[in-house]
Length: 215
Image (cartoon, rainbow, N blue to C red; front, side, top):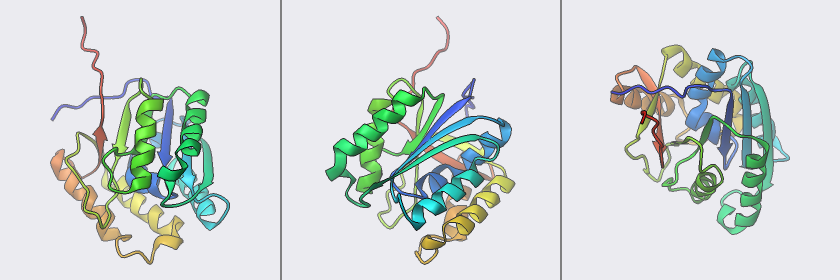
């Protein structure tokens, strides 16, 4: 197992199609990074769920997942399940985000995610942030679309447990869903941990990676 660091890490972009996507897919990684780097800037964009209960949940949740960070969150009101039909608006939001920041790391959905909203956003991110390290997070779902990840972020038991507690605490609107429980979140993290010789981990897809190994 080869371990590579991100080097200088001062700015992160995290995006989700829906409120809770970022926290489910990369909440443990955000906790680890923000605790290790107080004052790090996190620019977050969520395309659906603005203007109501879901936005309130997301704001409280991401504040908890990014302790000590300079968090800037935008939650839009595009229709859930219809992002491909609102491509221009989604594209404009992503391009506006890109114009405002030059991140060291981007956390986004996977380009092969089975959910059409996730997939739409993922494809926009890889073109708008084409010179950046984009890690595609995974979200367990009915579709059974989990693949073979290329990158892993090991999580301490503390961070893994903390992630699950925050998910349960901050998204009460999702508790009725059959897949939204402690077993699902910790189970996937345990499997990904086995794959990278850790107790727990979050896993990511990497669409393109440029190496700098010397001349």
